[in-house]
Image 1 (cartoon, rainbow, N blue to C red):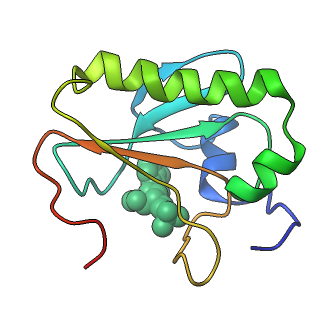
Image 2: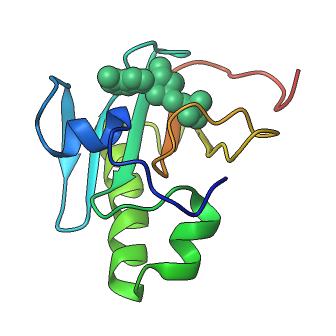
Length: 120
Ligand code: AMP
């Protein structure tokens, strides 16, 4: 994944409120919204509000408060959706081999059914 952040990516547009989205939750440093093309009954995307291209870039550059806020929001989504006991899956794709489509770091929170084995 390129280290150069593309300001025109679709999640940057969501953060600038240029396109509509279904907000689930937010905190100081992160935003959670429904995936437009859900792959499970629950499919929420959690993104940092600051510009990072992928998980590697986020961990290299974000400060501890941002990292903490990000993962706290993932947990808050899990609580809000009531899937902490049933289980869930967190996926974050990166780069070409990870088939990342949107070059703004995001975690997919998937649940609401048995998700099967990890990789097909
Ligand atoms: P990835 O392949 O990990 O980059 O996943 C990108 C995800 O963003 C896909 O699951 C898309 O369905 C989702 N997505 C793309 N555009 C939007 C949008 N405007 N609102 C919500 N989710 C979107």
